[in-house]
Length: 120
Image (cartoon, rainbow, N blue to C red; front, side, top):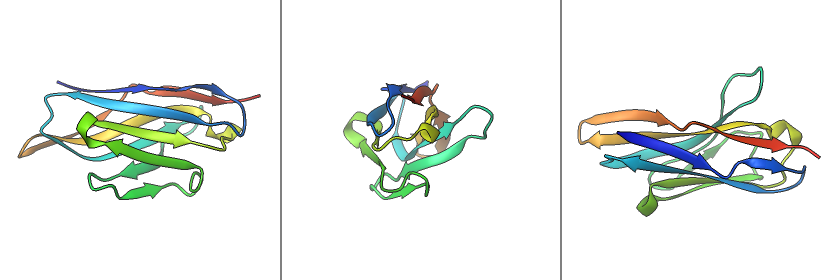
C-alpha cells in the first residue's frame, strides 16, 4: 500500500511564505513525476507545479517566480516553497505522484490535501 502524506499548510498573511511537504511511503519501486495541484472553493482542481525524477520543473503561469517545487529522492518527498503569497492562492493543496510499484506496474497517487489560507 502506498500513501502520500502532506504537511505544512496553514494561515499566512499576504506577502508571506509557506512551505508544504509531501512524503510517499509504502511498497515503492521508484517514483517518476511528482507534483502539486490546488483546488479553491467552487473551482476545479488546477496544476500548480510538477517535477520529474531528473529535476525538470514546470509551473502554472500564476505561480511562476513565486513558487518553487523541489524533491528529495532519498526521502521520497516533494516540497513546494511558496513566497509572495496572495489571497488568490488560498486553496486546498494536493500532492500527486506517479509511482512504479514494480517494473511493469505504475499508478498515480494523491495525497489527502492540506489547506493553505492567505488572509490578513
